[in-house]
Image 1 (cartoon, rainbow, N blue to C red):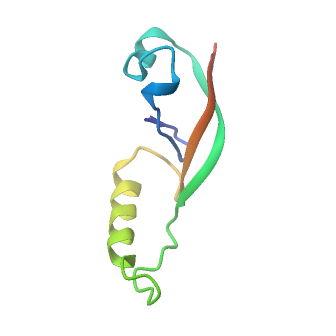
Image 2 (tube, rainbow, N blue to C red):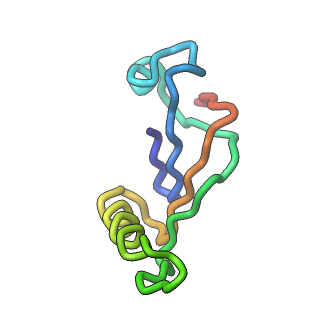
Length: 89
């Protein structure tokens, strides 16, 4: 998974890469640019007491754990599913 300081989480799937995602950080350097679509936003404004969602408390707890442990400076985390990932210098 790629994690940016801007609050973007990009899950990498081995199936779509020519290079094993585990080795990406070792083989390439510089900036990584990702083009993709945002499929989820983990926000700080989640309501843990939502009557319409019986899993609201569990979802809120999981989101808060992710927001606290990931090294990002943003309050909202965006999950981006990549269409293209390329490297620049």
